[in-house]
Image 1 (cartoon, rainbow, N blue to C red):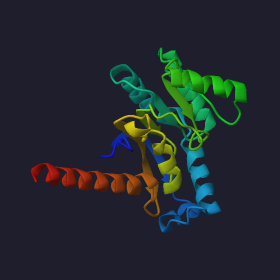
Image 2: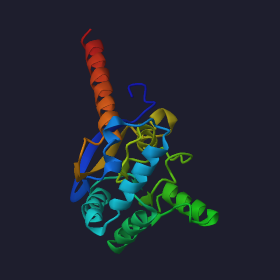
Image 3: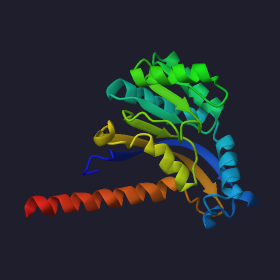
Length: 219
């Protein structure tokens, strides 16, 4: 970050108060954290995502995005739990006067290119998707990334937040805000959410860099 290769992240949480009970046996082994490439992890994430596609859960998320677009500058990228969810978020934002669009694998290539170009040019304020833009999408000016997709895989989580962490050296921003959506989860064992590990690692790195910078200034 001090080399300006990466943007300095700030992590915020959005509490949905949406209750999710994971008391089935198929979720009992989540705390053991299967390997990143396992089919079990992917299936569990898909099942969690399906459970979290609900209008009541979307309300506080949409409210926070509206607040950000009103009071803060910079493009917003949204990752939802499903294609339908990303479409509904974009629809509700447009109803509130925010130019937002959603894209997915179902969006034809010409429309997809046009929407992405409009996002990059500033015509679109919020771009919503489920997992289409986790890789292969490069727009360094993104300043706000919303992670509403339940994620156990640290690789997938890092890919999503990485869309907003390109620093000034690569045409990006000095800072980026990562918004983690947090639900009320009841489970047999603690869920190893990727955000907890990755955010912790980032915060430790920031503290270390700040400490080293302070020492250099004091020397």
